[in-house]
Image (cartoon, rainbow over all chains, first blue to last red; front, side):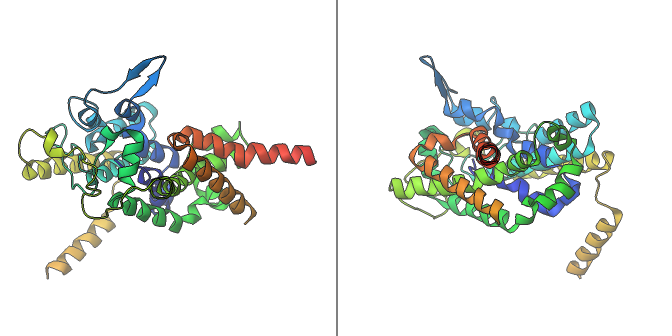
Length: 292
Length: 51
């Protein structure tokens, strides 16, 4: 799981896609896989009751559980529903982009995601840092900000800061507000200063949280830094191998990704966001040149 | 620049609270409320008191 990148990815995407995405559904898509699930992973207590998944890792990323929320197919399905219900192509595509970025980002931890779902419940991961939800929120934070995940999120902090133009008042007025009716609706209730604060919240949250956790983990406490692959090794993480029953099936993954990609391109074609013929021709020319 | 400065100060306060009370860092809703208070409500209240 990723602590900061899901906050900052939408701003970087916004920088490159401009008016081709709407920011609110992009952000919702980026948060969607964890939105209704993470509280049950860490557990919540009230009035003497403690609610928590009996097997948090399987619940969060596996099946049975809600691991399907972290799959490309889920993004496609919800985007399709958004399009069917609201007939809003921009909202549907923006949600899809945000959700897919989240799903592919979470491959980086030791648990990973079911990329080939629903064709397979096999979980794929590259194990760059440990999935440590079992350690509780603070334990997870300590492990996360003591390994390569710290650098990974740092990379997103740098990319987000490099995208600072998307945070300006002018950009908000010229690109963000006109492309999404949400801001017009919100603007009838709140002044522009408040709208800007809301628009900038995830950027603020991501960068401030990254800074605060580093200080808490390494200044207030003294957790050992271990930037090696899969680190920190003092925190055993749950691995995909523990949840997968069989061996890896890369051929199946390729087939599933091809099917998902075909579905995605067909969907983009239907909603009028398909890559233009010119783009395909350019790509073809480049590939031909590379082959020659 | 004045606006950027206000955000930086808000960020320093948020980080300061978060370092001593880590639970403060857990929720996006808390961050949104904090930013709305810091960047909109407090300046509006100050303007009203001064003006």
